[in-house]
Length: 636
Image (cartoon, rainbow, N blue to C red; front, side, top):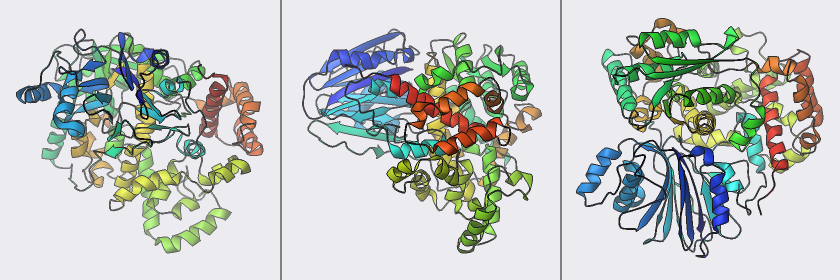
């Protein structure tokens, strides 16, 4: 696992300044503390930081092809590189190393931009081809590895593995993008392809970008892969459940290749436990498992992790964290570079910190909830959808829209419908309803929170546009599949994978995610919705398939997840800090917020009238970002 960076001169061919590229690369030293180097030719400069995993001594980067035509910087792992190496050798390509990096180079020389279609793994890379005078950027299909880029006013195209890499260029534009502030207060993160900054972007998952000298405008990224949405299979049959286990085992197996200590996260939930079960059957040595727990039983899953560890005789490592572990608050803004509001970033950071003491590579269970409908919000979404199905949209919209103005909450409704369900939500279509149900701050809440000046700048923009863009591709699917697809395009990459990448890389730990093997995704996502959400049980087909491998109380207990006690923090030890940060001159003078509504959120929560902890955390992380921006000086 590594960090990459580069400067490409689109409008001229001067060699980039080493001091600038060096400063950019040094900002991501944590991603690759083992080695770092540079490559320069007229018009191009490439930089790399390396965390050695495979072919430790023989694959330095930047790496040139044997014929010196092309040069690559690469972050990730290609799991089918051995097979590709055999195929490419038979086609006449030379190899001077034994790792996966040179395999990508020769795949480029053989197949050009189609090389990505041959790669199985997680990756973000850039290839400079001297003969063709072009720069090619690519990101893996699910967005496991990040790629940021920006076109500067002087015609330089810059890119890197983290946003801080771009920010360390003296000409980087720090102007904020108003629409992504609106997005952030809906989702809690900034969705692809945008960043919080006006003129910088994320290369979206499953996309490539090809640039050539002389181009004054930035070309549009091209999509080479998407989640399949055309077929359906029933996972209720024994044969398909056995096939699921076989495919999952194979996805795990190809991720066990490493020349450094390897293990797995083990939370005690279904997904990480499934990965550990598969690993235990594939290696003779005990699996290194890593768990953290909390000193408050309400947030502690360690007893279930211990059950799995005992069943498979793993080498189990465990650490207990205080429920008042909020010392990382100041570090989060540095880790994520833009506003990021998932509070589980704190325990994720801690488990990566603990795991790195024992292993360099860890497998995780991320992706299974999106793939097999494991989140509780899917159950709520389908309850709402059944209510929507009672009346056509033409009747629901005026009826529930009017009721929503009079009775915003369904206080009379069954408990399972109360959490975020509103009359307004029932007045919406499937995509808009899901958008409303997952929003940290709903449309009406953001309308109150934002200042008149900021709303005028937004000029009618609403974050529903993010879901509409993706939802248009899957309008033919059933409501559950639509929600899963939306999450795979937004929440999975913008929140879950971002969280794990930054937290793991902060400790120079590589995390591999077998549930997001693209071949496994292509097979599993086509399962019928009833096989995923069955009589209120999420991940039903996956759990049935895992019954021979995991204890019943691990499979069928209520999902817990990585939670922290925000509500208690904000009424107790963080009360004063929250008040000071949210009502600071920086926040109130930013022009984004209505001061009355901001103070109202604080008062309601701290008085115990309402639990506004998630919204307040989102505001606190935005305040931390603004503070970091204010303190930062543009490099000279």
